[in-house]
Figure (cartoon, rainbow, N blue to C red):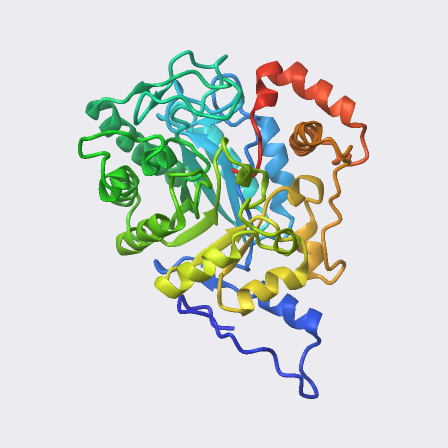
Length: 435
């Protein structure tokens, strides 16, 4: 398997005598390194996708609990670890416990976090973000957004925002660049810009949340200007050799919103800027896709792995040399290997399974298992199950942060009680998922 950034071969492994078995061939493929356009190498094809940990200290620094969690993941066998949300502004955090990096106050803590997470040989990227209007009411009574439009379909969890001024937009662009520089300075190998899931950059991209008529809105080109300026500012700070990735929605799955065709235009623009990796995701807090399901898919398709694989195939056809990572739905060795072998993607992302089975990548790559056994308990009541499932994964992260093993068999009522005591009642309105 080539480690170049060109489209991987679509040929199947030979079945001749002496060739590896199907499972062994899958393992060898997933064990192969991947070289990014800037020259950085990812040791293997399995990545930990971002999961919002909610474990920072009250002042936003990454303390011992988040280090404990990443110490657990450091030896999990992944080639790439992407952190959860690292916010660029302490005045705008998406949920309690977000890490904030906006100045040099916590450089020692950041270095300790990076050193801990990289002990097993994985590359470490920080996902950097600004929530825009997606800030719980108990954290902000008037968040900032491209336009003064409240988020729909979230039960009033977020207050109506105020529209950003041009000066504030330019300040946030600069904050992304500063955050990236400080992270790289303290040992992080790269950064991922969060442009999905309805956060600030996603809000700029969507005509449903961006009704501006200046240079930051109105046309698709202007709506994507904020993202492009963020990428350019980061690149100017970190240089050409540090990986800069973007997490982008395939669509937001809302009528009149950000669709696949416009998303492809954004991908082309990002490729022209020289990003090193695109991670494909989908949805917002106002749509079901953030729960890990593309609502446009038939039930038979939903049961397959890799929820956004059809869109990834479109991206590959349009921009064949852009490295792609796909997260959402992967649960088996052959599912990940097939997606890579087909040439559609280069990196397979795992999110929620790693909250319960932190050693899953190592187990897959050593032939100890061929699939994830994560099965949250379900009642059959959709709203209740959505609540208990989001809490289920979050509590597993907290357990590992406290030096305990995940407890998938723990009664859901205990998990919900623990979650509410820590984060408050308002937090259960927010569908915490892979970030």
